[in-house]
Image (tube, rainbow, N blue to C red; front, side):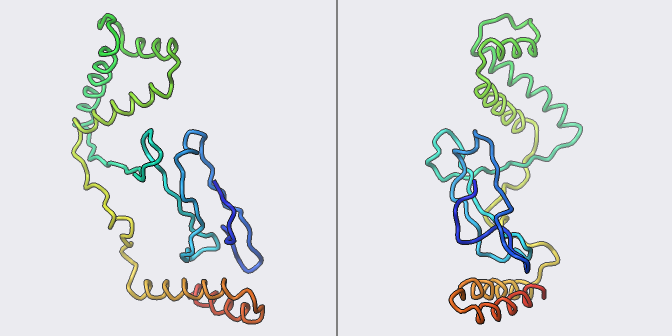
Length: 196
């Protein structure tokens, strides 16, 4: 997914390169957008890489994939097993008038082999899993936008301020390419601040 950029994914005292690669499957290829190397300081030799993953059949929308988390325990795992079986059976026999006495696993296997609609089978089973999860488990609090920037317990306001200064010094160093002497001074100042 890497795109041409004036920035590199890796930089240290010895040099810089695009050693970090973003590799995706062909199915996901169409869904990745806005790949870019961030200006934000990563406190590492490796740069932060940002990109969006679109959902659904219409890849033009701007909906990002969200992950629902569930509270799972031994009791509701058994409930899930019953619900997933009932949901898959219901979905399968809505589309087929075959005898319900036959083994569900064998029926699904034969259907996959016969029709060879692997992607469709995956989507149907994913939907069955989602429905069974909703029927079986209590949900954890949905991730909101504030969750993205929630800091770890040891992060302080002082570290936030220092990181902002480091980001500023990094940008200053990167923009001073015309004057090699000035660039070296800016680089030294930036690296000193980064190590702090």
